[in-house]
Amino acid sequence: MSEAPASGARAFPIGLTIATAIAFLILCGLGTWQVQRLHWKEGILARIEKLKTAPALPLVQVLTAEARPDDLAWTRVSVDCGDVAGPALPLVYGVRGGDVVWRAQAPCAVLAGPYNMILVDRGVAPDLTGQVAPPPRAFDAPRRVVGVLTPIKQLGGDRGEILKRFPGRKPAPLVLMAEQETPAVAGITPAPLPVEISNRHLEYALTWFGLAVTLLFIYAAMLWRRLRP
Image 1 (cartoon, one colour):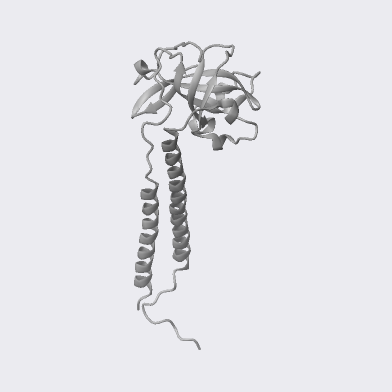
Image 2 (image 1 turned 90 degrees about the vertical axis):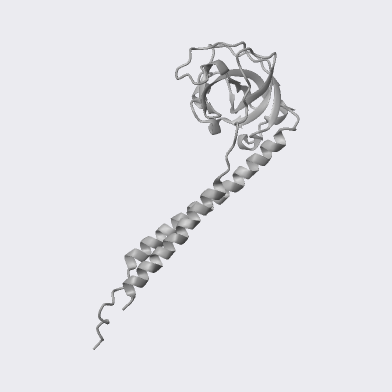
């Protein structure tokens, strides 16, 4: 006959162990993801730093049929814009330096690779900063623009919906964030890059890994208390 377990002994907590293992793997996965984001953000910051002194390349040279939009992010280009028929585009909501801002945008007719139009973000209207519902504004069409390219999907908002207003066009999946326009446009201040790009992914990664280690200590303490005679 088998001997009965010693008085006070308890069965091994299989359910608790499985739950702890799953939570541990999730926390480690989140920490690893933040490390990957750290390397990605460092690459962006290095590219932006290099951008400050990079010469502007002609858009037709950069925006080719073979170029991937994501690979063109933060590339400085110049372009001479043609006119695109249609009403003025609405201002776009944004946040800059902690303030609500309204950004002007306009279509730019080009012939670059498979595309014949690109959306230009011309900057912010300073006198509308902080307003919840600004009045409509109309500006002269862009002519010569120097700026940096950003994939439209990274900007969010209704940028993609704006392109649907031009069914006869083949718009590029990028936005040209203007640094300088010739001639300059009254009432607009170019603001192509964020005021500050935070990079706290190492802090986030250490937090997730710290929680994973803390979970193991808690599990070990509960296991010791449960299985000790």
